[in-house]
Image (cartoon, rainbow, N blue to C red; front, side):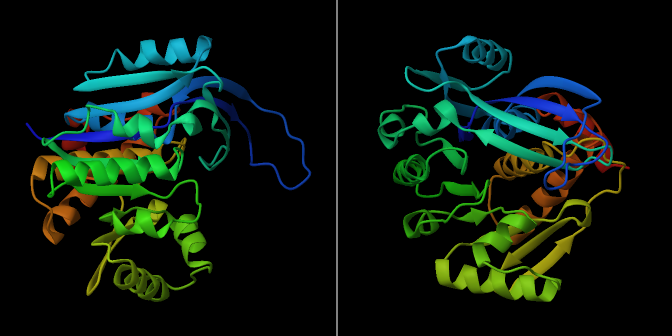
Length: 312
């Protein structure tokens, strides 16, 4: 049976609910404080699992109470395979998040054990095999580990599709570009990659197509919040609108989208422009459900929830 592999950043999310995001130099009071299990990689993997995908996850936590609690939480999900190593030198990753009344957020991440993942850890894994059809990663784990996972997966299965979420934004190495099939940035991240802001969607499309030609990737999907997601190939583009909902917390919206996109693409069984487009529509629905609930993993929808909303 086809499966996907996720290199998972594992963070403890410490979330403060505030009236508005603090301005430069401003101190504000929080109305509420909660702690959740998060991390982009884990959120994306759990999103896919809750939607019925066969997922193998690898991550690393610290030798601390947060790490123990995170392992217990992950064991409650029906992962196909699950391997979490313990760093002897770094603590479990943490993220400090402010969420405004309008649902906007700002996030500061302390990577901890996530950045202790080495390429050798990935090289020695048995979680990647000939059944691995999709590999998913982000910048919350070291670039060298992602490159190792992508190249190892393609050596096991030449048809494997690699999906990279360049978040938080860093410089993408030529090696990583060369082994990435689908890039999924948001508006801020694509501006960072291109080192410019985009006022018009036409300019964004041109920049994405130039990147596709230069870096030889197959698809680029720019998530644009309530506006939807922009699908770009070398000679095609389309803005696929999102569902209109009232957002309460956008913290895991992007992760929900990416996990749902990967899960649906895996279920489609083939990567074409049509299956990528249908997977974006599916992912837009999952993200719309996510933003209506507070928290990260707790807000990720089930397959039944998404399919019900798709019919509306």
